[in-house]
Length: 207
Ligand SMILES: C[S@@+](CC[C@H](N)C(=O)[O-])C[C@H]1O[C@@H](n2cnc3c(N)ncnc32)[C@H](O)[C@@H]1O
Image (cartoon, rainbow, N blue to C red):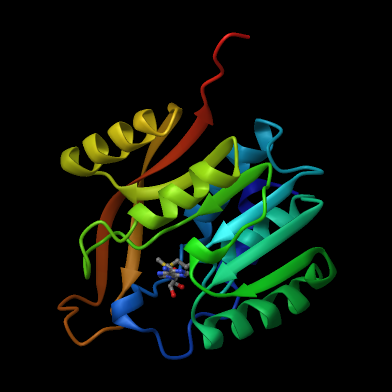
């Protein structure tokens, strides 16, 4: 499969039925998800690996990881409706049998995995809503891929938080990210922001 085909497949998945603003339920555009997953696959972090998608929403990242050959993908999401949609999407994409669906807060997920992929809330509704996601990701995996706003303050927070958790940023790729109007407070038809896709790796000491 080529990156463009993956992007197309992911952008055709069903979106949120009734997106909830307080949970920042907007989906990762297919092209951005494909960039993240391609970076991960090219580093050997997907094929044959145990992967967790934290805040899986409608499943875009987790399903993409399964399509690229992950051994098993855990989709973790606190919103039941979204998780049901993710399950339907996985069924349609033909990867349902390699995915498990956990309904609950990311802080409650307790399994260790090889790789985390996630697009946490940017924190526009609740500042630092991405914090519990980063905390959990750094607890359960040695390699983490995550999407955050490409802003100086956010970069400082993310890099400092990673360093304090024993991780270093090995890659940061800046990309455009489109959010179609879906909440009453959205003023434009399409909100265009810039995001950073990060790859974090646990630092190894004494070895
Ligand atoms: C920005 S959306 C991303 C959805 C999906 N991962 C994607 O890339 O399209 C963030 C998702 O995290 C979920 N979420 C927010 N806070 C959460 C929490 N504390 N625990 C679990 N899921 C959460 C939301 O319901 C939403 O589906």
